[in-house]
Image 1 (spheres, rainbow over the protein chains, first blue to last red):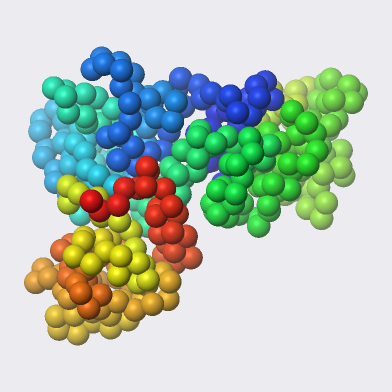
Image 2: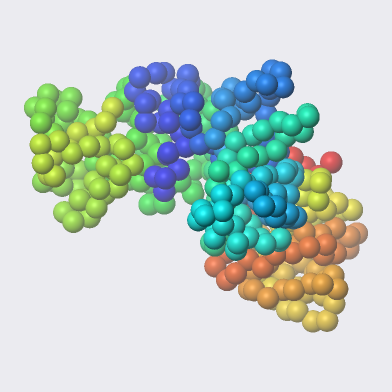
Length: 269
Length: 107
């Protein structure tokens, strides 16, 4: 579920700032409900949208299509997610593959939308950059949990090490994010400033990242930490192949990069 | 559907009498004009079907109005396939009611 971390840029840069003052980058993709789109704050009609003190630029949501109109240059959707409804517009280029995607979309199907908020004569709508049909229906509920998680994150800070009162309220939503039944709080004890920045990772990946951070801190791994050493130091009962797989995931997610060869890695932060 | 439709389980129906809700359930039986659903909190709810109703899958999401007798009169519904994680549904229902700023109630 490390994919979820991608929405929270602060979680990767966490070592630089205090947990309470994390800011998402300007291009962070934010999962929201339609109600949040409708209630996002805007200083004046041309201004940026803000939600929980964060600028809303790229957004994503899951909603049900209630009406559709196909034009020659765009497709209009009226979408609704149980929290509100909003118009969404997707511009189509005739040769593009977008057409194939949106051909599957019908009224009364759930879709995942990526886009940005627009205002036209006082009415908010969504300009879609990407639209696809939901195939695994659990994604609908996943999205709702994720939207709540990210809001809580911005309102109360990240999970471990967050300012005081946030914790109790987070505890009930941790489960979907800890697929390996790991407790995100388990990492909270040690490490001071940088010790909790990997808490949103699955348990094996977190162990790997913590081990690598430790090695780097010891100052003997300037050329990168060896994969074998990671396996011995952080692998536990995990096989070498599995450790390599996890490393690939961490590299793919931007936590690590390869240094002198494929068998040596360093953290990106 | 301009108004919000809160996500509910069987226990929360009594807080929403006369209101429109949405509920994911497993179809237990389907006869004539009504269906019986098992909800995410392992309760049961009777759904009075609309004429255009099309329950085809194991799981369905019903949008409908809650009657005094805690049955639901279907307004619309969507087939949800056969792989719904009902624990996730139940947790989501409870989560949404704890955060009205993100998931508003019906009025």
